[in-house]
Every structure is written in C-alpha cells, then in structure tokens.
Length: 84
Length: 95
Image 1 (cartoon, each protein chain N blue to C red):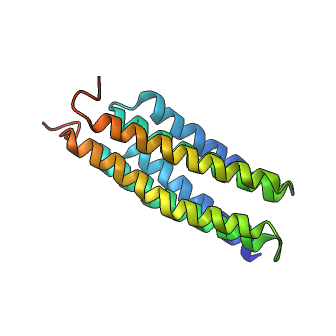
Image 2 (cartoon, rainbow over the protein chains, first blue to last red):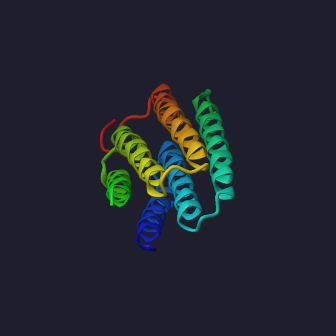
C-alpha cells in the first residue's frame, strides 16, 4: 500500500523547500532535522512493508548520525562569528 | 486495523508539522511546530509499525529506534533554538 510512502515523500519534498529558501541558517538547520526524521520514517516503513528487516539497522545509524550532525552544526553556529 | 489507524495518525501529524514549518512566521514558531509535531508523529507511526506484523524479532529494533528518536529529537530542537537565541536572532518582521 504505497499511500503512506507517498504522504511521507510529499512531506519530505515540502520540507526541502524550506531547506532551500529558509531565510536564516537556523531555518535551514530545522529543515535538515525534519528531513532526516522523515527519511528515517520512510526507511522504517519500507523495511516493515517490504519485509526487509536489515533496513532497520540502516535507519538506526541514520538517526544517530543525523542527530550528531545537527547538534554539531548548531553548536558551530552558536560561536561568535559562526554564521559567516 | 489498529496498526493502520496508528500509521495514518502518525503520517497526519508529520503533515501537520510540515505545514507548520512552512507557514509559521518566525524561527521559534517554526521550531516549535516542527519539533513537537515531528516527535509525536514519528512516535505514533513507529508504534503503528510495531503493532503491524504481530510479535516479531525486528520489533525490538523498532522499539530501540523509537526510544532513540524520542530522546534525540527534543535535544536537537533545543540545541537549534538555543543557538538562535544566543545569536540574538529576532523575528523576521521586527527588530
């Protein structure tokens, strides 16, 4: 049933619009965080509905790495002159 | 049946978070919409995926992923908001 994947893909595309046109760096960071959440959910839905359990490990590693990247970029922007 | 209801509810919450991230007015409002709705939607959708196939071996991985998402998503949102506030980023219309 591809309706769920379609909804998540459309939502991912709309979040990528905010990532492309976000006025401030924090908008882009927020959009990157939301996009990675949607990608993780898409991988999980594909893993369960296609009965490929190995994809769940991919989703776990993707979630951990995206969290690390977002926090590191936020801490870098927080420093004086970090937005340049 | 319950699984599909939970998955639909989670997808609906994710769509609500997307609309909030696109339509709200300044950075903090968008962060609030995206953070709260995404965390709840991801949790409900993963619960639906756990319920979906009965009790199986990969449900443990899904539960671990649920715990990881519930722990890390608010931390990431708070980190972005603290970074924006430290740099004194006001709303777009005002000073």
